[in-house]
Image (cartoon, rainbow, N blue to C red; front, side, top):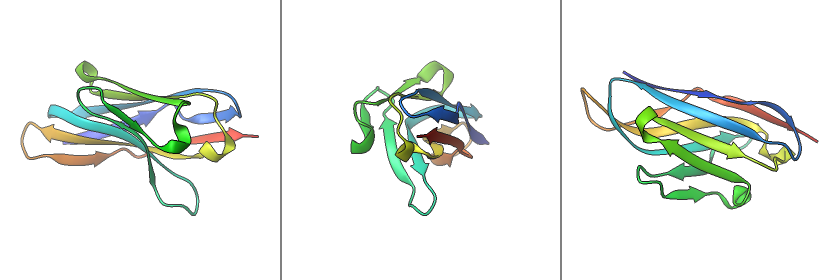
Length: 120
């Protein structure tokens, strides 16, 4: 079984920074694309950033220039460095990954989420 666990959320003032981490664990053969999504109250879940296994990244327009996604393939971990945070970044942030488990076919796995609150 494969699980994703996020960490690093919290309360920060506008203009501040946070770094989120997400670790994939379990019986994993390999991890393909990984990404971060967020969901604010009353809004749909939206893509924040994703990254391929070779390091090609993609960002939502709203976070370009402020957020950086990275990964450590040896640790099956993806990070989201968030700088110049704004109140509108407040949301629950979810990690997502496409994973090849050792005992089955490709799975899309979600973490439970970590809350980021940016005060004004």
